[in-house]
Length: 343
Image (cartoon, rainbow, N blue to C red; front, side, top):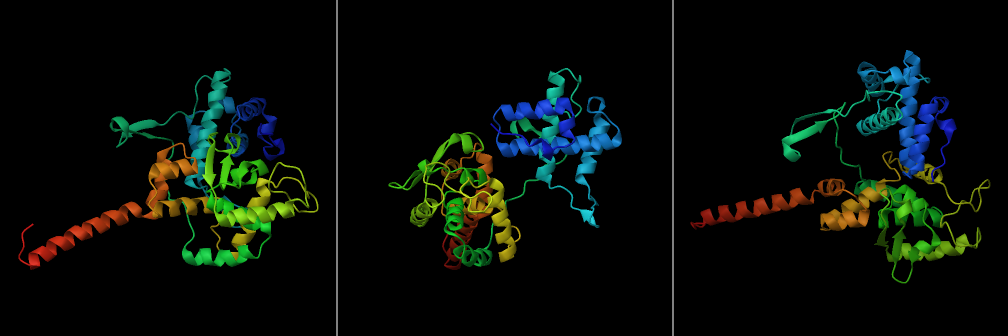
């Protein structure tokens, strides 16, 4: 169960209804990242509402629209200049958290109608010829992956890192692991004889277990790291342990891994690098290698094939195949005409 750090949500923590809602979200067993994202979304909304003198149970549609405008706009920062506007995906997530919060208030009979609503339907290409449109347009961007030059800039730096860092780097790419999956690995999740890794249901995003292979390179690093790990702790359990003076021998936190990747991004000048980059690159490489979309979905642990299709599009495999097929047909036809042949 996710333990909520209420100090991160100072405004929300003073609102009994909002606090009960977020606690209920955590009690339902949602992923910790999801709980935190929902908390941040409603924290920002409550802060905005308080600044406008509008109580949550008195909010109407125009107040929600004003909040969306506020969340979407650039604002002066304390350091001077402006803060960047939130990404489209972040805005969508905040609207979702707000909608769920008001759904809770409706169920608790605090409010009669959810002011966020469910958007409306417009003509489109989805099922039934209709397409759902929310409060703000949804932008679907392909994930960023490093090019060959950027990857080449990263590898020498990683090679100079600790054995734990190198193993985490390799596994994140090798098995297309999310940050939470990587940091939550346990020693018993590995099957060295068959080089298989068990991704437990409780550490996955969609609570679905999967078993994935890992390479001989990761296997060698794993064996080498186990020898180092014995100097920090001899018991089985969390695989990656901290070596810091303050938390030596304790499980490595998600945030520690994120900080290490941020430092690597600064050191390599690959500023777009994130903990999810390795997963994006691995899945794209599988698509480039000709893996079927369903095979990639199974490897990645995707609930929806639509998510997997992003990597098919990113790889360019579909378009390349179509172009190659088209060019082959045109070449054949043109050469036949040159030779006076009929098709």
